Each structure stands twice: as C-alpha cells, then as structure tokens.
Length: 84
Image (tube, rainbow, N blue to C red):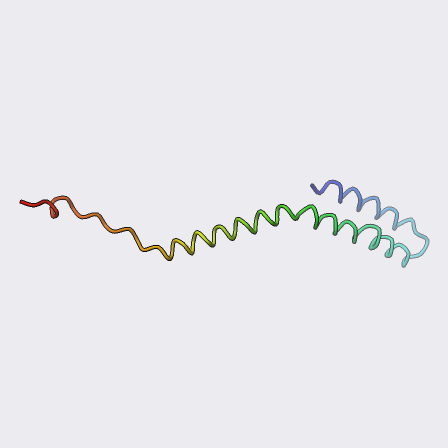
C-alpha cells in the first residue's frame, strides 16, 4: 500500500532539490509532496481504521456482556443428589 506514496515522495524530493531557491524547494516539497501524500495515506487507511474500531467495540461489548452474566450454576454431584 505504501509503494505509491514512497515513489511519489522520491520524485517530489528530487523536484524540490532542483529548485533554485531553498524556500521554493521547501514549498514544493510541502505543498506538492507531503500534504497530498498525507491526505492520500489517510484516505487509503480509512477502511482498516474502521475495521479495527469495530473489532475493538465488539471485544468491549463481549467483555461487558461476560461481566454482566451470572456465572453458570455448578452441577450437583450425582452421589449427593441421588435419593436412597
């Protein structure tokens, strides 16, 4: 998933290095590389973040339900419950 952003940042870094002015290079790197790349990575990671959030909520719900349910009743020993 990260191969495209890595490649794009490589290209933008080389573009920024060829700028005639240091400030122009920094602006090129930030606004042509870092900002769009961070937005792209954030948008591409939305599905995995949603899946992790749902799994966490499900685990918390299962834990809460386990705490609320009473423990199962212990089975009586057959020897003590049998009538003589």
